[in-house]
Every structure is written in structure tokens, then in C-alpha cells.
Image 1 (tube, rainbow, N blue to C red):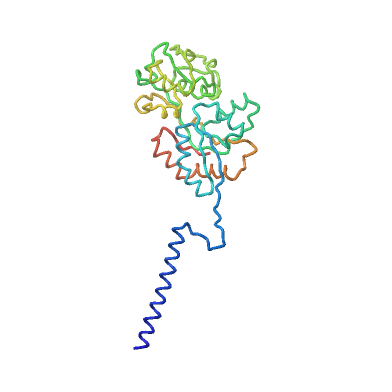
Image 2: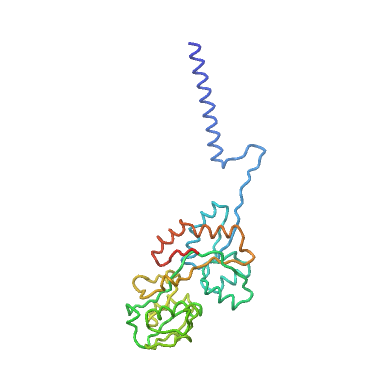
Length: 290
């Protein structure tokens, strides 16, 4: 009997110690795992990076990866821009660490025109096919003689836009590489399409379309999405997948090997992010990792 009671007592003591240990562990967890008295809690500081981006889809993609980067010890701050000029100026002035909005063609032209832009791209994420939209016509073939085509006033975009019309047989260009084409390179234009009658800032293309201006409006996909344009209903022609230009992560040359910026690219190019792009934008934005 005494032996039995001794066993019960020992078991109770053991359970008590276990329970006490568990309670202490739970209390420590609830208190943020406070260190024992006399020891300081060392909070791991996140490395901050600031990335400039267009609102849609770029900033939305960046918002998606914020918790993914936080798990890697990086705090991502996003600065949204409404045009294509300021993000590169901000990068030059070191107001941001990287930007995410431009294609190789645009970057090359900007660096040619601005000698103080010492930039380099460190990775690509996706492509946004430029589209031609019309509320009145259902195909490029239906465009009437003298149709007014509203497009971006960015020359680098013309090298993406004009080859679409050439591919559909509406014009001919005098340059072998369409990405270098300008309106002045049109050598044949049987329908006398008006490409230079009205050119506006890229961010104003969607409002021009919604206002019913022109016979067709050529809109960058990010601005079509941001402006609420129904891409499926009004899109009558798009860039071919074989000529899509990727949207890049661009940094100052001196920062090309910064670990946190390389980690940014790694996460953006991950399968999880590429799947997010596919599911969120239904083909309007296409993963394009190079």
C-alpha cells in the first residue's frame, strides 16, 4: 500500500512538473518568448528596400510578395507612380532602391537620352501585351480609310505598336527590326491611317478610349487594367507572344549585387508569384522570366 502511494505520489509530482513546464512555455510564448531576467530580447531588424512601381499590376504584385520577403528578413516598401518618367528620376536620385515598370526598349531609350542614368536590369517578371481597343470596330480590317489611331507619345512604344498593324497587313515598315520603328518609318499605308494626329501620355490612353476619342486606341495593358477597360470585350488586336517585352526590375549599377535586391528578384520569379499573376490577370499579364 505504501509502495502504491509512493508510486502515485511520484507520478503526481512528475505530472505537476510537466504541467508547470508546459505552463511556463505557454506563458513565454504569450509574452513574446520573454528572455530570462537579466537577458535582453534581441529583435531581428528587417532590411528595408523601397521599390517604385506602376499601380497595376506592378504594385499589386509587390503587395503580394511583402509577406514573402518579410519571411526572408526584408521589409518591402512600395512607392506608386502614375507616369513613366518619375520612377527613373527617383531611382537616379536614390529616393528608391529599384523600380519595376519598364521594358528593355524603354530603358535603353531613357538611358540614351539621360546620360546620368547609370542603371542596369537585374531580372524580368512579366509581360503586358499592348492592345488595340475600339468600341465601334471588331477587327483591324474593319477600320475605315483615314481612321484616327490614338497612341502613346512615348517613341519607345511606337516600336511595339506599329508592328501590330504591319502584322495584320495594314501598313509596311522600312525597318527590319520593328522595335526600332517610328511613324516616319511607315513606307506603305493604303488606308491612310492617322497615327500622328493625336498622341497622348500613356496614362491618358484609357480615359481617351472611355471618352470615345479616335477610331481605335492603343493602350498599354497596365493602364487598361488601371482604367477599367474591358480587355476581352474591346480588344481587337494585341502584340504577338513572340515579340513580347518583359517588365524589368531596374537598379542603379552600383547596387546590382545587393543581396536584398537579388532576393527581391528571386521571389518575384518564383513559381508562387508567377501563378498569382496567371490567376489574377487572366492572360492580360503574362509571366515572362528571363
